[in-house]
Image 1 (cartoon, rainbow, N blue to C red):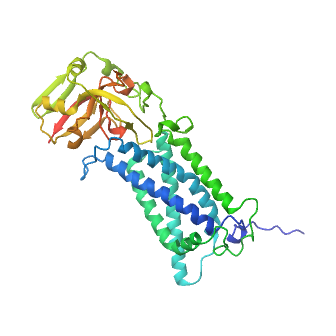
Image 2 (cartoon, rainbow, N blue to C red):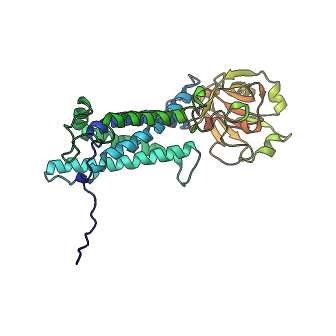
Image 3 (tube, helix red, strand yellow):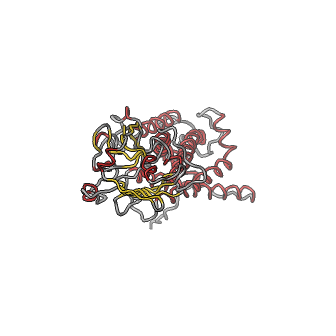
Length: 390
């Protein structure tokens, strides 16, 4: 008569790989922390740039500032993916460890477990939704920007708690050779198997580098040929990518109508300008990159009428806020607000031409907003109205 053995849950001692060592985990965790920290800081910059009427005005210079910070945001988030996967693999056995009996150790153990659970959940959420946003794929119903921002604080807070709890282990592991067994679990193998620890680290660095190269071309033009996963890298009319076409936003008829007028309003003062009127005004040409929250960006030369000149037509004073409204009837890009430092800047334009050619429909014909150091989501296309407030 045979006795059937009941399956049991795996325990920490079942995992004996030489590679699952604090010596490896600490080194990968160091670079993962750097990647998360960089993504967090640049994410704060992006949130600041998109906040209406912030207490501290977002700067207009350097004109390429947002292009760099948002590019770094997406690249650092992408780099974090292989780093996080390898780190989770190395620490997985610790998640199965039995709780200690000593009360003080039990408190630290519980704090560590809670911080790890929150950190892992928040990190996976941030990376998954961030990559989906870069691809403009939204299989959820929540508002991405405030949710991503809120969870960033949760993730960075959990990371700091985790570092504080594990700091003695981290310092000891980083201070010793990667092959040291001082911090290893007693049940680990006595030596390397198929791969050495240095081999695992080199493979992880290589995978991270490949992930960065595969996406960085969305921001760095000379990497576009090798950045096979870079979103909208150089595609689009005049070599400048687009997110939403005129057809998608249902503005083709209104944008091409002979009855189109740009309306500028300040109190009781109002002017309505035809496209011919705009073309007859003094034009300014400026080289301003356009950069979107998805991480892609492109350099471009725009020609159009400075917004400040349009405000002068209705007697609007310097230091005015301007609400810019599009012909499109819906969408998060329909309305944006120019802070005074932007509305008064000589290179904040209602652009009529791109690279010397008439603006295409998909780039915002008959005119679009373009301003220095401003997220693409706020560079309103198919502009119909400027409302001035002081």
